Structures are given as structure tokens and as C-alpha cells.
Image (tube, rainbow, N blue to C red):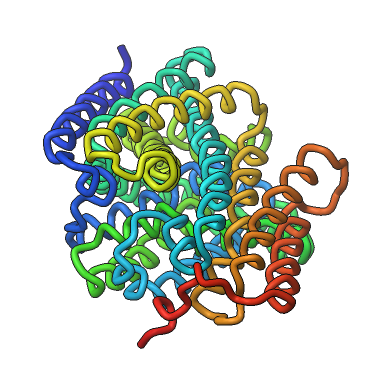
Length: 463
């Protein structure tokens, strides 16, 4: 048994313990879904960062950094812009005292928007869960030679287990542990990788000149196709909003978002350094494995174990977050709102936990079906961002948005994204089609339709 397996077993035991502790605290749906709205600043900060990053950073961002150098900084730019917007609205988000993004859509636009928004999130987030499961299989395959399909199954079952057990309590406290693991691992690996690659001079000598262009050889269109999905996802990310709703107060929510931005950007820049250095030392590997190979081929066994556990932990933290969110949509936004309005807390908890299991297994099926991580991840990001980004921004910024405009925008963004991605063979990035369709429909339909009695703009514009 190698040192990684020993470390992994110890780490997984800790996660299981946290799951059981969380189960004891999740006595009702309020505690299960938003941790009793009592997360303190340190816990909130850790769970914001861990939920925000994940495989999108240690695999997706690493892939782009390895392949396109400075072009990957557009990913960082997209994430930074997104969290900056969230900071601006964080206090208002907490004061709304909601549970989910569809709650927000219903408050502003009415129940039809809630239903369509819920469907969009369930589709998109289940796909994102699958991409995280695929990333977990990379870790297990890299160090144990286990079949990646078996690795995906193991990772999926573990995430399903501790999410089912404790809900937001388990998610939040495991996130803190997982972010700490990631930061330690990256802080150790980045200077070693950078030095081993020969520093900046080693980068310049061994990498294509396009790596040092502003767009990394992608061109402006390609660079924006990297930045926009992350920007549009993170700005209206239900995971992030659930953390705002879980904060102890509006002030804690805002401070947590600010610290989350600082911590998140730090992690992304460390991954950038490691992945670009990896391109110098290991020029012929799968770009998805740019960070993994540093752990297995460059670092000594103990330090490599720390980095691999860090990668595994942050991927799992994102998987649990994106698993709990759509399960909440099913139990609160669909079941409790439309099917059983008198549902007890116990019934809501049961439905949520069943949804966690079912969606986790669907995500696992997707992980086994998709061949490449990056495409899988970007599809999930684009489905969600193109569907709800503009209607949610309009909820805070434009009184003129109507419920018919929002419904048309969400539906058009979702359908155009799925049709373009899976039914049209084109070099035009899907995000351009989905986002443009969503924006045009929101504006045009809102301008030609009247407000309905189901809308409540005052909740978003009251001072």
C-alpha cells in the first residue's frame, strides 16, 4: 500500500465522520439546506472558495494554462468579475432570506420562472457533478492504476454518502478542510514546479511564443469563450447564493464574498504557475493532467500525496455543492412548492436525500459517457449561464424586465444551448449562441409585454 492510499484512507475516514456529525445537526430542512443560516465568517469563506473552484480550476483551468499559457488568465478574469458582482449584491441576497435561485426567480418574476429555472439548474448542475466525478477518476487512476470507471464509481458513491448524511453542514465543514488541503498543496507545489521548469526564462525558451500573447493564441473570440461561461455561471451560481443565504448575517455574507474572491484568485494563479511549468517539463501529456503529473513525477512521495489529496478534496467539495443544489430545487422548488405545499420537514428531507442519490447516479453516468473533461464542464457551465444569467441580473438592475421576458429568456437560453451544442456542427462557441438568444429574448419580450401581478420588483429595489 503506497503512501497516497494511506493518506487517502485517513482523509476519507475524516469525511465520513464529518458526514455523521452533519447528520446529527441537520434536524430540519432549514439546517439541512442552509445550515440554519448560521455560518460564521471562517466557515463561510472556506465553503465559498471550495464550492467556487473544484475541477474547473485544477483540471479545466490547468488544461487551458498548459495549452495556451497566458490565455488562461481570461478564466481568472471571468471568475474575478463574477465574484465582484456577487460582492456588490451579497447583502441584498442574504436579506432576501431565500433558499435557492428559483426562489429568487419566483419572487421577482412569478412561479412559471421558478419552474423553468429549476429545470435549467437540475440539468446543468447534474452535468457539472458528472464532470467533477470524472476528475476524481483521474486522481485515482494516476496513483493506483485503478480503472477510471471504477474510480469514478468510488468517488461518486463517497460524495453521495456524505451529502446525503449532513446537507449544508457536511458540505460547509468538509469544504473548509478541503480548501485548506488545496492551499497547502498548491503552495508547496507551485515554487517547486516553477523552479524545476527554469523559472520565467525556462518558460520562454521551451514554450511557443503564442503562450505569452494576451489571448494565448486563442484570439479574442476564443479567449472570451473561456471567460464568459465561468463569468456567467459564477455570477448567478446557486451554490454561491446558498452560501450567502447560509451566512450568519448580511455583513458576514459580504465579508465572506470578499475573502472568497481573494482566496479563489490566489488558488487560480497558483494552478496557472504549476500548469505552465508542467508544459515545460512534460510537453506530451494529456493537458487535463497538468497538475496531477507534478504530484506523481516531480514531487517526493509525501509532498505528492499532499498535492493529490488536495486535488481530490477540492474536486469533491465542488461535487457535493453541485449535488446538494439541484436536489434542493427538486425538494423545495418543485415538490414543496407545487406538489405538496403542506409537506413536513421530514418529507422535504427525505425527498432531498432521494434526489441527491438519483442525481449523483445520473452525474456518474455522464462521467462514464463523456470522453473529455473540459467539454463536459463547459457544457454544464453554458447551460446554466445562458439560461439564468440575464434574468437574474435584470432582477437586481432593471425594473422593466417582465415575467414573460424572463420565461422566454431562460427557455430560449436553455434550448438554444442544447440544440447548438449537440445538434449543430459549428466552430462558433455555444456560449455566444445561448447568451445572445437569452439576452435578446429578455429585452424584446419585456419591452412588448406588461408586468403581471405575480412580479415583485420592490423586493429587489427597496433601499
